[in-house]
Length: 142
Image 1: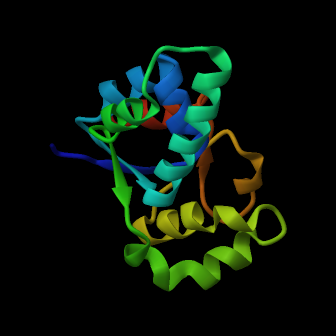
Image 2 (image 1 turned 180 degrees about the vertical axis):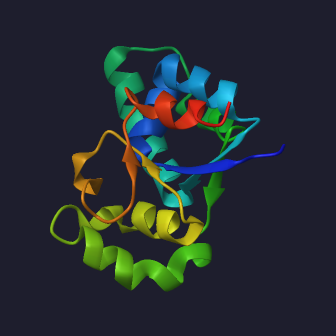
Image 3 (image 1 turned 90 degrees about the vertical axis):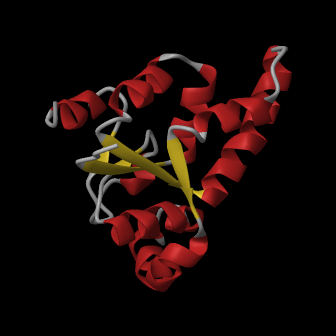
């Protein structure tokens, strides 16, 4: 793989990739030229939320298998990698949702944008893309 761009995905994007086709299709399409990452704690969050959604919707699917399928396209990043940026990340996200510091720190470490639907990331000093605009960013490399 010869990736030219990097993106950090928030848990809501991981969930969308598991439950729908649009996000997963985008990940598959651009995986040859884009490195997709997400903090490993966000994978755990997504798995937990997926279990609830799958149960509520009465879907006959194992949430762990959805996450496993996704992990072939999105690489988990261990907190050890970005821990040194925790303080800076917490400062940036403190007024919004302090639990999101992992995503901010990973993006700071990787020097890349965040793909999210969560407005808490807007204005934290890291470029942020939403699903309805992500193709603009991704197609710039094609």
